[in-house]
Length: 171
Image (cartoon, rainbow, N blue to C red):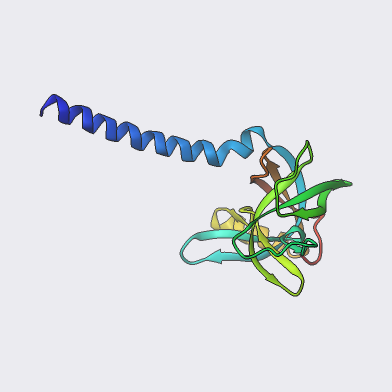
């Protein structure tokens, strides 16, 4: 094998490793530097034949009133300001532009607009678990639960844990 081919092969391998490393760092960033908050949640569905056992979650934060004077569309980014209310965190307003300052917020994507409400996805709507744990959580979370979430300074969130109790009866 010529030296030129060996260098090309080595460069290709290193590039692939760099891309995989970048994806790992991007996904772990909220867990490393994020602020932990507790959000009330209600389970939706525990299983998917293709993806395995998981608990699908819904949040009150996933449905927000339309911000005034702005016309959002599905696929647009949205920023939900948070405020602490006892042990849980709740919505304190919606913005279509990233908030300035030290305020804690969640970054989401609008999945739809209907009835004067925004439907938002944050990427924290599924908690994967072994089959027995997913079924146990489904039973325990029937009346609601709490999701422990870490939120990075840029609003990206990562789900840390799901616990029974303290949830809301409806999303």
